[in-house]
Amino acid sequence: MAEHSALEQLAQLVIRALAAGNPVEIDGLGSFLPDPLNGFRFEPRRLPQVFVAYVKEDRAQADRIYGALESAGFSPWMDVRKLLPGQNWPRAIETAIESSDFFLACYSENSICKKGGFQAEIRYALDCARQIPLDEIFIVPVRLCGCPVPRTIQRELQYVDLFPDWNRAIRKLVAMMRQALARRSAKRLSGNTD
Image (tube, rainbow, N blue to C red; front, side):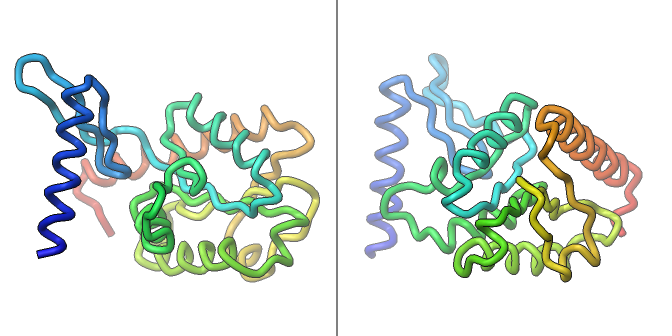
């Protein structure tokens, strides 16, 4: 009964927002938009989602990455921008990682020695990556400074340095993700999903 009541409350919240002319985004799925003829319409998510993993000490640089990805036509995901008050954040983060097209792990002097959420997110992303074909790019380590990248990551994945030339590195990162998405799309169209 409580679950049914919660769903009814959610539905009423969506209806009120749409009636007020506000769109309602359901993270990872799409958005309900007001529609004068039908009341609302649903537009599925079309932008590739990029999960941005970082430690709080690197928030300013993560925000900068978020903005650059958003400007480039991606849908970045950061906890401080997407989590809702009262939301079960560990499950929301796992869901966001699972539904993302790419996972950016932001390495810095702050993150390499820190225990906690950042390390857990990387471990979960590594588990998710095991379900993806080996030739597909999912986890992208990015260095915010000249720090070491953990050997377990460095052995298998090429990283991108966002320094000394931030703009050039972001262009390289965006180009790589677009190429990876194009390859995935071509594979799906050809029916080759191995």
